[in-house]
Structures are given as C-alpha cells and as structure tokens.
Amino acid sequence: MQTQILEPDGGSLALAAKIIKSGGLVAFPTETVYGLGANAFDGDAVHSIYEVKGRPQDNPLIVHVHKDYDISGIVCDIPEYAKKLAEKYLPGPLTMVFRSKGAVSPAVSCGLDTVGIRVPSHPQAQAFLRCVDLPIAAPSANVSKHVSPVTARHVYADLNGRIPLILDGGKCAGGIESTVLDCTGAVPCILRSGLVTREMIAEVAGDCGVFVPRPGEKVRSPGMKYKHYSPDCRTMLFTYADRAAAYGEYERLNGEGQRAYLMCDDAVAAEFLPDNLLALGKTPEQIAANLYDKLREGERKADVIIAVAPERQDGVMAGVMNRLTKACGG
Ligand code: TXA
Ligand code: MG
Image 1 (spheres, helix red, strand yellow):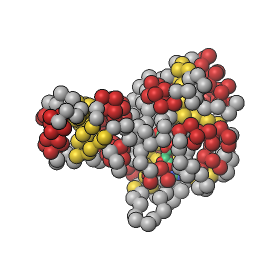
Image 2: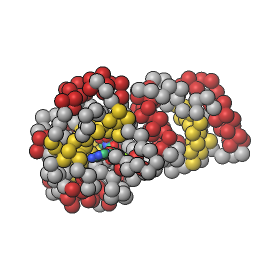
Image 3: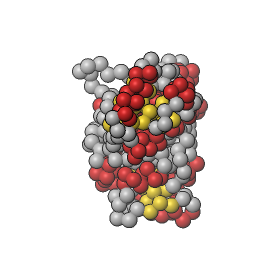
Image 4: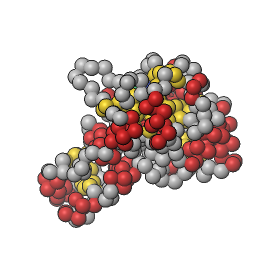
C-alpha cells in the first residue's frame, strides 16, 4: 500500500472521509500527538487499528468527535462535574471516560462497559472530524510501544506502507497524550496524566483523584500495564538530584566510544554543557512539547540516551515524568 502525506484541504479531507467511510484508516494531527483513526461503528475497521499498530487486544481506544457532535447516542450517565469540565476544557487535551451505551464497536472498549470520549482542539482535527461526521476511534499513530508521533514524518516512519493517508498538520503543540479521566464515579479520577492537570480538574470539579494501582489490583486503564513510548536505543533515567552522576555516566560512555546523549531541560544543560545534547527546553509546556521529538531524534543519533528528570514534578510535569519513566523502561 502506498502511503500519501497530504496537507488538510478540501480535497484531502474529502479523500480522508471516503477512506474512513469505506473502512480504512487515516492518520491525523491533534494538539497532543498524531492519531490513527477509524470509524468507531465499524468493527472490522477498528480491528485493523490493532493489527496495523501491533497493539494488544485488551487496550481500549479513545473515541474522537467534533465539538458539536451529540455523544448522547454513545455514552450515558454523564455527571454534573463532567459537564462543567467539558465547558471549561473542551475542545482540548482531556479524554473523559463514561458508561458506554454499546453503540460503538465492542472492539473500541475491549470488553469494558465504558468508553473514552475526546474532543481535540486542533483546527485540522476538528475539520477532519466534521468532514467525516462519525465518531473516530484513534490511538496514537505509532507502532505499539514505540514513541508517540508528533509530526507526519514520525507517523510515516512507523506506518509507511500500512495506511493509505496521513494528514499533515505540522508539529503537534502539546506533545504528550491527553489526560484520561474516569468520570464514572462520584469524584473524577485521573487514569493517565497529561496537559489538563489534576489541579485544573480539581479547580472545576471540587476534587480529583489519581488512580495508582496497588499490587494485585485490577488496572482501570489497561494501557497502564504496558511498556510504552520507548525509543529504539538504550536509555537511562537519573533523578534531578543525581544529575552530576548522569553527566559522569555520559562522559564515561563517550570515553569508551559509545554515542551517549544527555537529554535534559535547559537549566541542566547549562550546568554541564554537553556536546551531545537532546535539549527539552525551559518551561513545562516546552518540555512536554519536545519530549517525543527528542526521544525520536535520540534513537536516530545515539547508542544510549541518558535522561535527567526535571526538578519539578507537579502539574504538566507529572505527565512528562510518567512518559519519561515508561520510555526509559518503566
Ligand atoms: O491525546 C491522545 O489521547 C491521543 C490522540 C491521538 O488523541 N490518543 C491516545 O490514544 O493517546 P492511545 O490509544 O495511545 O491511549 C489511550 C489510553 C490508553 O492508556 C487506554 O488504556 C486508555 O486511554 N483508555 C481508553 N479507553 C478507556 C476506557 N474506556 N477506560 C479506561 N482507559 C481507557
Ligand atoms: Mg499510545
């Protein structure tokens, strides 16, 4: 199969809609990462997402809709706090999990009685969703377990020859996946952290839990149990307090003739001034936006990526730490 990369315009959006309606897959930009979309009502199309990605069959997909799409045919029992959150943060990088009405293909939810709904804010994601006017099941458009894609080129590198079309909307500004929020309980509970932070949710909903699986307890978001976001090279992760040791390891490995790269924020980079640098930027938003791009740059250039965790780990950095820890082996 030939994979086309096209900028979204009238012609390419009409082509995308035609592919989706005939059961095919289309990769499209969002404000977080690129998604790999299929018609959520079409079981065969949804199954092919798992095949193309090599994704485990028990890791459910998020359903994407445009901002005027009526989700009352898909989900039920939407609590008051979720309506307030939607008002404040949607369209945007927040996925809300509700009880499913069983309208979308069972392959979307992998046997769960819930479904995650996301309304992306990226104008070209909105244009695509509006053009198809169907709920679109879409995971990140990478091969399963690899680093999520934030450019059309990243999608192409992973899925060339396996999908017909990539809509190229440039580099994603957010950089890490949406916050996944369980909205089936009395209090919302974060299943995956992201750019809509616990603090932002608690401000609107009054309270917000964070799900931490205890040993033996059933995971509520199956995606949490898998290795994820991993570059195709060796990785090491040091705490901020151990950053001097990280630099020591960087020097030692380069001295041995291995290509070690230091991945860190601008402040740590300024402390050590390494030649082989994967600079994440200064602010939490910049660090989130650059993380996957730098992991992919690292796997092209380095034998070993030596990452230094950021000093602060609250707010947006909670999401960055979650991805960085998984990228570096869990
Ligand atoms: O930003 C994003 O969310 C991107 C873009 C493309 O929208 N999508 C994305 O999808 O990250 P994916 O498939 O890579 O991650 C979806 C996560 C997984 O951890 C999955 O387990 C969880 O959402 N999830 C999906 N449906 C769920 C459900 N019904 N209950 C609990 N967790 C769910
Ligand atoms: Mg993913």
